[in-house]
Length: 494
Image (cartoon, rainbow, N blue to C red; front, side, top):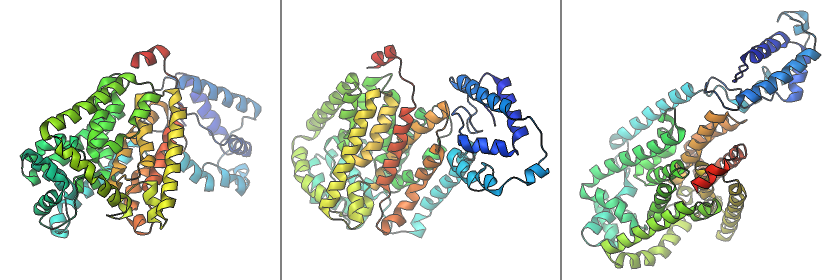
């Protein structure tokens, strides 16, 4: 046992007390009675960081241990002595070193999930993922690698040719089929503002553009996560299974995650930049559906103004470049987009919302909508209550992202990658303040969830909204443990 703090002598004394009394039945009973509670400042070899508030926690627990030591006889008993041998088996079963107690302790603290082990484990993931993608041309030559990016690239190509409106009709779909070499349904349902982001990629051939897109958005995502963590490796973030779903199909969720991560990092110190990044979601409004509400609840007026100004600027720019025709055709195609997504066109297992989960399980549309509305209402109510505390920019964005997974009915399963943003925030807080009970093992399980999504979906179970709800619970729980912001700093940041 190690206690991080300045009172090292008290901590060493505490170690000796536990060492000498470890095998006494009285110690076991006392430990069982207090539930083996450890202060957050007692940390494993994962971090090794000094904590600002650890001194008080160390003194408090050292005093408690001294009181218990004074009340019990000081005696040193060999591990092979009769006293040790005569301990009741029931007490041993509940000991943190034996039986169920050991399992509970391993899950509660998860000290075995050290930084080195996690990084080494995810490096193996990374190598395997790269290897699997490299052999696709031979192992699965008919797989539509970059299928989704083909729709983005062809729409931008048509826009460069002065035919942006054709991206929303049969001409656009024919262009996608020509690029992929087969007749496939790859509709373009994005607003004309999105074409501004993809037009530069249409200047080069499709294959080259796809590679540049994947690497550019992947690098932006990694940079955002790295900025949120402040220290440590980004290998686990890059090896997150959801990342490779996006990379395989050329989706834009890594770009979305980068925008969200950037806004989380900058919201406190540079609210105008954060607002501008959120305003870029005019390319895909459903991902930032909750952003206006969050900014209003947190009284982020400068960020809100910047987001509105950026959105307006992008709309005006798209209109200036492409005219009004793409907007008319975009509005006209919205019913088809709604019918395709909410009707399960590609399969409900490919969507990540509560609505899709109910439909995938065999529920009716009305039942699914009821569940979706209830989930969204609960998420918004929790946000309103939590954001009263104004927990800080990164916390606010982390909460918003987690709740988005419960509020958007047409969310694709590839959007699960945006949960890496609240995940990175949780890890950063844990490294700075200490891990909460069961937090580490919960994050590890959520990290591996995308692996189970395909087999679960094939059996009528959608795990994505469950993962989003779990992340939301972890974020709310962590926010409750945050220190209050300094009033002057809070006013300055708004």
